Length: 213
Image (tube, rainbow, N blue to C red):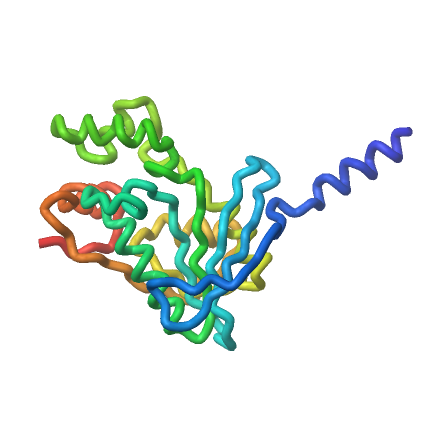
C-alpha cells in the first residue's frame, strides 16, 4: 500500500500545470495573416488562458505575455494602455517569422479583479496613483503570477523568446520559471491625458521602460 501511495504521488507531481483543450483558426482585425488560437486550462486554478499563435520558422519566436484588461480592451478605456498594447502586439507577432500572444485571464488590475480595479479607479480619482490605490485596498502592488505563462510557452515549444514588454519584472519572472529571454523589445503606446499619470507610476514605481513627456 505504501508503494502504491508513492506511485500516485509521483504521477501527480509529474502532471503538467497546463493542458491544451481547444484550438481553431483565428482571423483578426489586427492581423493580415491567419493566426491560430489555442486554449489552455491551468490545473491549479481552473482558469482558461489562450495563445494566439503565428506559425513560422523563427529560431527565436516573438512573444507578448498580456494580462487581461476588460476595461481597456472591450470598453476602450483611456485610463490605461492595455487595449492598444494588445492590438499592437498582435500586429507585430503577425508580421514576425513566428511567435505568440499569450493572453492571461485572471490578471485584471494586476491581479486584484475587476470590481476591485474599479474601486482602485475611484481612489485614483481622489488623487492616488495606480500603485497607491492597490495598496490602499489591501493588495500588493502587483499580484500577478507568470508561472502559467511559462508553462504555456513550454507547451508551444517556445522556451527561448524575444519578449515584447516594457516591464523588466516580467522578463525576470519568465526567466525564473525556465524561459530564456534572448531580447526584450519595447511595446510603448503614446500616452493620453487620461493615462499619463498611470504610465508615470509604472515607469517610476515598477521600472517600466517608458518615455513620457
